[in-house]
Image (cartoon, rainbow, N blue to C red):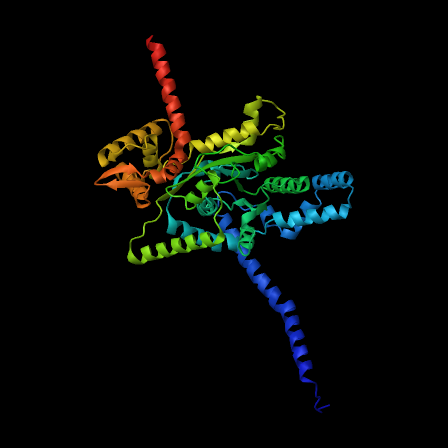
Length: 483
């Protein structure tokens, strides 16, 4: 019994590997999963006590369960049956496509990633780039929303920074779920976005099967109470102008809504503006349909931009890119909106035409777009690009414009509540970028950069147009009364 048994060394290695794998599978991995699941559950309990909108159970459901629900949803199955007959192809082939689409769309929300890593990163990034300000938020109205409401934040799309800025500013209110374009489907960004609750969208897909899978997921999320964030414009504004609404995701949400049930959809208009949009020149190239620059050019410009900022930080000459401001508007109940549009009825109709709602929401978003220093100064010069102003005349023009906008009911963010300082900030940002020339204290437009100046004035162009329209209407009314 005590004799020595000799085995080959390779067998010892194999036995050691199998033993390690067995320990990993039955002890280490379950312990690690239990540890992280316990931390995540504690974090969820902690943030739910602070959030105005609690994290719904749908968002915490295992991803594989949600994928199965989506793949075998009745409305998805109906399209599969129709296309199988129409295209004369095996049903199994279409189901494989459904599986692919579902796995591409459904997120994998992780509370630790969202409220720890993503929030920490977003906070430091936006504060490194901008002076971030929350202009206005009706937190009381948000807190008073019914628990069974599905909240959708609808916002204008100025920059890719919108995702990060809104995530940071909304993190004390809720955990947002975004629709993100295919550009972000690269490792490791894809995994990070899914962990934050985002889902991917093929913007121009004409495949009816894909569109149905996406539509059903959006409706499932809304019915599950997931707070969502969508950009009604559908894409970044190329020229700075607030664009018309697209009816894609908004249409999916509304067409799946039954106004006769308890769960309401509540839209929160969000207005975003920046003193500087990081990708402004690239967006203008898209707007002018100029040829795209190659990857090498992009890499060189990005490296030069990063190096310049590092050098400025080391030498103490770096300014942040002005102000980034967000306004949260008054909540809009979809049930009440339908009731107001159709009259008071005991049985409310389904909303078939989404366009009037989309236009109303865009109007509300436009009305709360923050008015920032650069936009004000740029608007004054854009009115007459050949004009020259000294400091005194420029401040007079800006103050007059600002007063008219505020009298019209629009929201301006004035840093330090000091109008003189606001003009100084706007001029400094534009002169540092050589959009304005400063010759012996006299400011004029650098004509080569006129499109960029107009880009920033366009951010409040719709507000100036409304202001002028109201002023003209009042003038006509006064004239008619005096006759």
